[in-house]
Image (cartoon, rainbow, N blue to C red):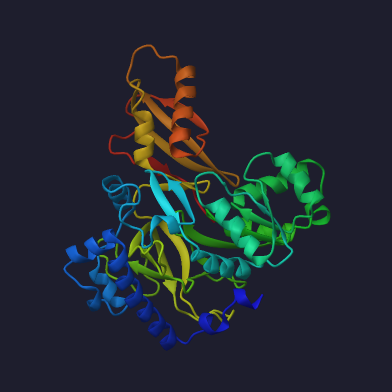
Length: 421
């Protein structure tokens, strides 16, 4: 399995790593300028030339690309907005994010992802329950392929059907899990409710957890109570996984196939270790050579040595969102998608989505103020739930009707009231 751990690359000295990234910056900026019209236009409008971008620090001269820019570019120049660095026929898959945004994937990211899954503990002949969605979004299918590259057997279950999934885990002696932490806890609880002893009756030893916050208490529960070694990663739908934990679990390593900057959200200037800022990513690839793409997340990094021997910088944690979008059960809920769904209902005068944490599950309530007049609240509630859940691709748990004025006029469309220990 040495092909999934590149000791020379992953343990470079600080000087070697700086030279490596500066070289990659020169390549990817030049490549994007020559092959992706939208990136060329952005660089031209900034009044710089590719030859002026020689180092990671020089990237500050290039404007940030936001998710809204992707939507605008693809609407103006459908379907891919001049963002591709290869002819469309070379694209391996296209996934769809809210917007809609057409996210193109080639084959370059698989080596990066195989490295990440290897670090998480997956090995050849593992039997892995993959509970991420295979529909529209990339998580399920991409992780399926990467596990196959490692040599694992993959069970593409998605979420739901918990009793059947418990039976699958027992009958097929499942050794690994891929998905959100909350759904893993749901499966363990279901197994216990069915009378099983999870440690004794099941073979699960490894879990790769993403798309939700993983609290330390839940991590300890998986490890100490159920014997499941678990690690987490950070990623976005547009570009896949961008940072990952090693066995030390002391921050998330940045793989050598991407350039990550932590910047001041107002100025775009790069920040140093320990300073919280906006996460920008530049993938070092031909298919999707986005330069300085904003994930919308806030984080901070450390350059302190990791006992595992890898010398890459590590993201310490995800500290929040730059904008108002909120990740719920692994999916971002966007205010504009919520607004679009509710604009169909003239009975609704004001609204606010509230995210809470009930046990290990994200709970999503939609507060509605009514415009007045006679309203069939039961029917309206059902229609609204169906509409917003479809638009946001996350199931809302309930509608709560409130009196006029309860929802502040200057409210956030989505209020995140979750707390994490």
